[in-house]
Image 1 (cartoon, rainbow, N blue to C red):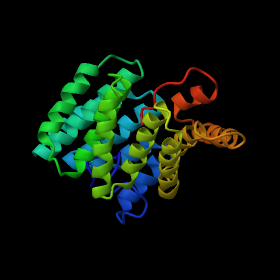
Image 2 (image 1 turned 90 degrees about the vertical axis):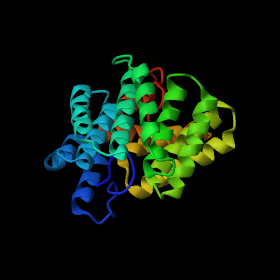
Image 3 (image 1 turned 45 degrees about the horizontal axis):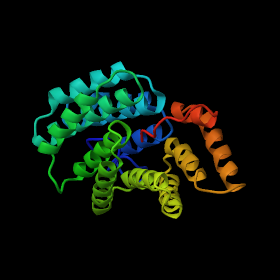
Image 4 (image 1 turned 120 degrees about the horizontal axis):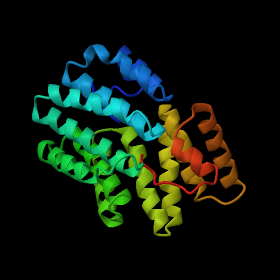
Length: 262
């Protein structure tokens, strides 16, 4: 079982494991509570506990709710972690949850996020699969909390290379998206459009429905009319259908946009 529900084996419908296929189908449609419930019998082992934590943390990122339950699951995952790899993965999850809490104004846990990511870096093998995810999340912290775009770009590039090396296609959709966002910030329109297009393509191919609306909305920012409006309209339709991401709903409703958390 994969240690994280964010990416990696056990998260797409063609992974072959019936449990993981069921978890992916629920998760990709925003049914995180139901997906986490399927993993309850496995929460006594590090892999199951970590994956369950990642699911509940992802729910926080998309719904801006469920923080206490995610924290409780995280403490359980930390308690059953034994190897350096497992402890590093748990620290990565703690850092991500603390980052999200800070980003959405729930509670300022930026120092906790930095400390947890540093601990994860010390425990996670440089060539390991989990390293790419850690690099990506450290990039998020650099971009959206520290406002350090150059550090974020370097972290995203490391994550992109690691995801490609390990065949982590879902994570590639995130690295493409955030590298494109930085390119757009620098006025590199063609580079941004390419990255957003790749991110959208991957998410559609994987059936990652909850991530499709953000990808559509991001791509719309690089297109001219009438394509831009068409993309935003489709993004809004998906948000109404799924009810998430809550922060994108506000953006499409012309409220002040919030940073992309994922």
